[in-house]
Amino acid sequence: MKYKVLKFGGTSVRTPEARHLAALKVLSVREQGFAPVVVVSAIGRKGEPYATDTLKAFLDDVDLAVEPDPREMDLVMACGEILSASVFATLLRSLGCPAMSLRGGQAGVRTDGVYGNARILGVNPLGLVEAVERGFVPVVCGFQGVWIQGGLPGAELTTLGRGGSDTTAAALGAALRAESVDIYTDVDGVKTADPDIVKEAPTLRRVTYDEVAEIAHLGAKVLHPRAAEIAMKFDIPLWVKNTFSEEIGTEIVPSREMPGRRVTGVTHSGKLVYLQVDLNNAEPEHVRDLQARIYDALARYEVNVYMTNLGPTSIGFAVERVYYADVQDMLDALVLPMPGDSRVVYLVQSSNEPSRALETQRKLLEPLGEVRELKFEVNEGCTMVSLVAYDFLQQPGVFYRVISLLDRAGIPVLQTNDSDYSLSCLIPESELRRAVAVLHEEFGLATLS
Amino acid sequence: MAQEQKGLELAGQPFAKHLADDQSLPMQATETAFEKARGVNRVEIRTGFASARIGGLTGDVTKARLAILHPVFEAGISFDFLKFAADGMSFVVPELLREELERVLHFSGAEFEVKGDRAVLIIHAVNMRDEAGLVSKIVSQVIDSGANIEHLGEMHDRLLMLMGKSGAEKAKAMILASNPEAEA
Image (tube, rainbow over all chains, first blue to last red; front, side, top):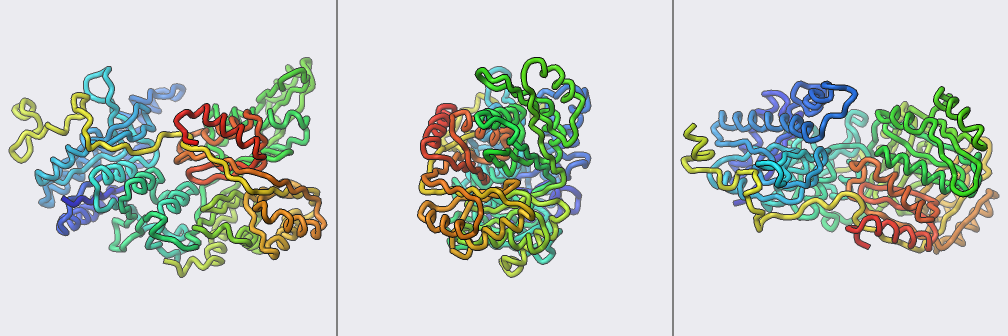
């Protein structure tokens, strides 16, 4: 039996019309002689009645002061995919195609016991195989699996965290040794830039697993890197396609199949806040301790940082705007005593103006030693624009070309970050559209495909 | 009721054999390991780098930085890890190009320091962004090891940190000790 896994995201199952188009894709695959295995996400996007975030709010709203139990949260969040799978299976049946919905555990998805962010340990595909052999199209709930544990009858339901449905699809594809895994979404594939900014941005016909993972890492969530990781490991052909068009889509391939120097695209992140603290006020022998304490605090509060910069006289990092208030609270009036006999105590000011908490803390500390402030300079209106490339950025002059281009366009670059696959610039959010457009043009991406 | 007694019955045959998601179902031989363990998977060190730090820039610092980088570019020197500071910038070049870089920077008239014998500590961690606080934790651990991180870069599955060779060895040992599943 030759299997094809088709995964439909929230927008692809959002309306009866969308689901009908998705169902036609499944029927088409079946008519071609393949055994389709369908994976679905919850219906709709954030804010819509059956989307995961809406379901999550049922528990969040019970007591705003108390974080819901993650086990209960997983059960509630998984309802979105169960509903979606059942609706989709019923639709396929109405079109004359025998179909049955399966929960993640029934499809054999086994995970560890980390509620809310479980990792797939293995997939037992025998249930799926049997369903197919009996003539059914399995419609599997994405984003969920089970943790086999002995405490309770049955297995514990777990959810897979970000990119969970893409990950489910790739894992099932690997377990079934599928001919392909097709991730259906509402764009034609992986684009050279956000089409909302660059209308003529072409769809890439092929891109490597690493490039697509880097694109996702830098902000364009076309395909989750976890899915790419699994497909790459098991050598399963992976495609990104559009439910609403007949475009061929983008094939995700191993690097060995796509050698050659190239620029892949321009991507951008969401809203960021850049925080930078000047350490000139610190004793030189305290700098390393201060760096360690600040990063330790960020780790303890599980803060994701971007654009990290460590220098002898400064520390800088960016955080997502939605988390900035938490980071500000966490850092503000943080007391950093130094080891040894030092009477110097450092006090962190995390916003441009000192807070009451900071003033209070300072008064309390003054009798104990010398209080020195570490004042963060905060730039709230930032975003990150990135050039993603393969075997290209190591060439002399590329970095210079990017920053001088942005300078000529009058776009300030606040900080940079680079890796083997990408070169990112932190810029004012107001300049995002121009930055994406000029980089796209400079590197000739409009003619790429 | 009849269906409950027989188990799920579809197409005329009992269908519960492989669909029960309870622990009575044995792990099958066809089961395959999938995702890598979360957190740090591998730690490696690459050597052969030099780092440059330029300071003392005043006035329009952006223009001043570009004025220094332009001859570097003209000389065909590839640089990475470019980081901006208030009064300058820093970056990394291959050790082989160190002398050439020093020559170019000398002619620029800028205040600079070039250090050789640098190493890049590479810490692999799949999907770092999904592991909240992981980057901060690694950075904190590396600093705690006594290493002096001079530059830092990241991509989807790894964190790259420039430092002296001995610091890189110490940091590698510390990261491996706190992540026993990681490969060296």
